[in-house]
Length: 83
Image 1 (cartoon, rainbow, N blue to C red):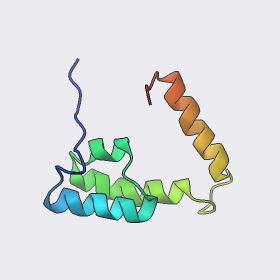
Image 2: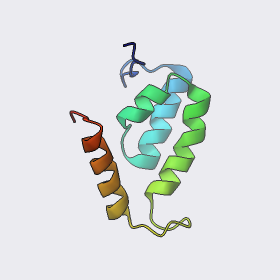
Image 3: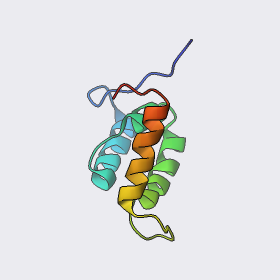
Image 4: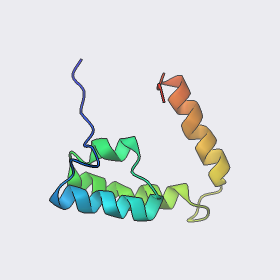
């Protein structure tokens, strides 16, 4: 099965490098999902603000950050993620 590859932090150039810098400023890191999304920079930029907003407290969300992170971990576990 073909897979979309991740763009490494050291490989990023131009728009992708700027996207990684913005992601690091907003989230404190560049998650693996955003390294994959960087293959389509326009989509990645659109999702960055949405994702950053949804991970924080407030913004209309009734769930705490702790509950959100637990959902991410459980989903990863159910999908058989190795990390």
